[in-house]
Length: 456
Image 1 (tube, rainbow, N blue to C red):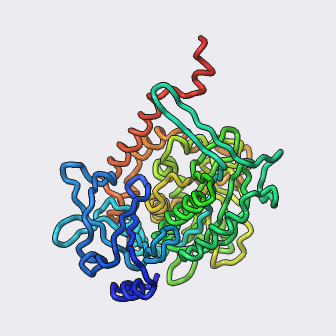
Image 2 (image 1 turned 180 degrees about the vertical axis):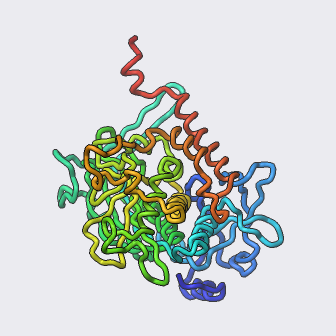
Image 3 (image 1 turned 90 degrees about the vertical axis):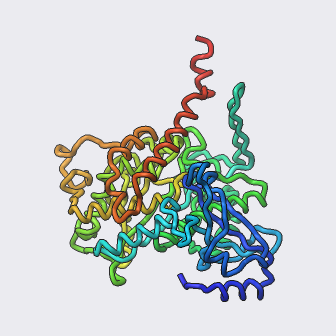
């Protein structure tokens, strides 16, 4: 990413007739917030001292000590097409209010940068590359309610297929023009798109596949892609959701992450003589991810709804294994990749209820742990196709609930503390937030419980 100075951004904004500056930042859970102010207040002081905000409302601090400042990241400045007045938008990061304006350790963009530094410090590689697949649903109408005396949802698709809708063609694919608009807008934001298509889900499931970028940029692209989709849907009177499993007995939506590491520009995952074309470093990386997969789920699949997707029968990655072309395994090795510079793995469990920065950072740290420890996933039985059927170990499933994943994270998170990327306070805060979500779900009667038990 090209570095930008304040003067460059300010002069460009004036030349383009910009009237407002908009700062975007994620809270700890991954929900997007923003703050806007007139261009006249966009000064060098704002870019160094920052703008004050209530950190407790972002889940960062307690209410009795919640003053923080957000500082713009000028390198991310771009035009926001969803504002009526000409507006320049950019990401911001949370800092403390001390004189040094110390970066706040639990801000997820800061954390992602620490993860990138931890990779460089490891000596194994100097850059990670991530290729995301965005799966989501489009509905013509959506309504939901959850109160003391009622609980219900209603989704209207506008689509129906007899069989799976993978790569369905227009006119049956009702939203191809919508995806064209979204992808064009992604291009305006500098987000590369490989292709888009209708996904397997027969009621409006879509996919847009991105292209490779570094860890922080991949997080930025995920945030902006969701922002673009939500706003384009609003313009068209549609509803978009990244819920992993919005519909019973239909395919769920994930955020599959293709990834590899490079050192001095060379892909360290490639070895034509290695298992599935992977180097020893790549196999160690795979072994680290699979070893820590249960704990990772607490960060890559952090909603109760996530585990309604991670069930057999819907091409969901439910098993802690890896293999060529295996879409039921947690890690797939794409067999169609012939370019050595793009040799990669695909980690399939994540979904976009995750904070994308925390998600990618955690996956990479697990992989680094595997490289450092020389974990051999083939020897550990994580590659069933490499072992005679009679010698294969029993199927090892990923966690079946968020509660199980959180328990795993509580017991297994030392790998996340590498280089101070995560810290114990953040882990404890995450566990509290997510266990509170579970408690909120558990105390509410489910509508189907009425079907099963009301007349007992």
